[in-house]
Image (cartoon, rainbow, N blue to C red; front, top):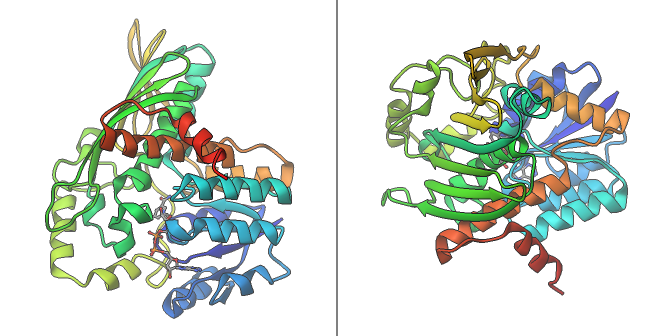
Length: 387
Ligand SMILES: NC(=O)c1ccc[n+]([C@@H]2O[C@H](COP(=O)([O-])OP(=O)(O)OC[C@H]3O[C@@H](n4cnc5c(N)ncnc54)[C@H](O)[C@@H]3O)[C@@H](O)[C@H]2O)c1
């Protein structure tokens, strides 16, 4: 059994903890959060111990590993402390805010000989995994050009102030771009060579990086175009039969209601109410989790990712390949972490992967400022050469 502690009992933890709790080889033994309501909600729902801080949780002798779902800017300090205490780590996306911190995290896990896995991101989604298999087994063949676009209400969901500040990793680039970059990297099967991008910030009442578009080229010759808007007007789930990001049915007008609720309510209280202070969410979803639309044009067919699986658009026309639904939402992430810790399997989304995805996102931000192609590998090299 993998005995787990959860660090940060907010929105991210509420979404992922049920899958960890449902896994037969994982036992959630404790959680920590400075918020008393979050601790009380977690202890009651997960039937586990709760602590006010990480240091006390790391002293709990029954914990082998931690899932870190604290704010972005705490991921590095929490991951390094956990690795030094000999604990395996699953850390939320984005891995860190800065490349220096992501590199420190990877090094801490390497020095301690512990697992470091990053996620969950939509790179784990079952339709993405199925598409990657269809590419690898030759059904579709190599991906040449990938198109990923998502139009959501990200900017108008209740947020902590840091979630809107670029310096703290806020805005859509690090928070949401990490999903899209993981997806297209997995499908392209190659390292990103260059990024050319543009970032938008156009609501004067809610200043933040709210949208971006980017062209990624890969070392194997493939290319990917990304578009993301968090401005809560057009909703890309309209193109997926109104299956929502978390695999639940939704109705037209959801994003307008998100805007209206923000305008009417207390944002801080509404944010807290989305965490364990309010309650864990239903975990049996009728569709797969998914972010927006993804189409991969491959050597032998085009792949269209859907809430059910993948439509293979081959020479003979479209054919739907269903991806089996997991027993509970996000089960694949829990299973990958259990296998990494208990069976020694190398996770796909490990520390090195997380560092590269973060470098792509920093390249995106830098390209938008400087108006030129940026190489993520150059950013990592520059970081490594710093004294
Ligand atoms: N993968 C996903 O689907 C998903 C969804 C939501 C959030 N997230 C990620 O989860 C992370 C947290 O975001 P959120 O939306 O859950 O925020 P949140 O504010 O809802 O939750 C963060 C929690 O961490 C707690 N916290 C703050 N400092 C702490 C500390 N030192 N020790 C322990 N706990 C501490 C806060 O009190 C809060 O309860 C972010 O990195 C975000 O990207 C991921």
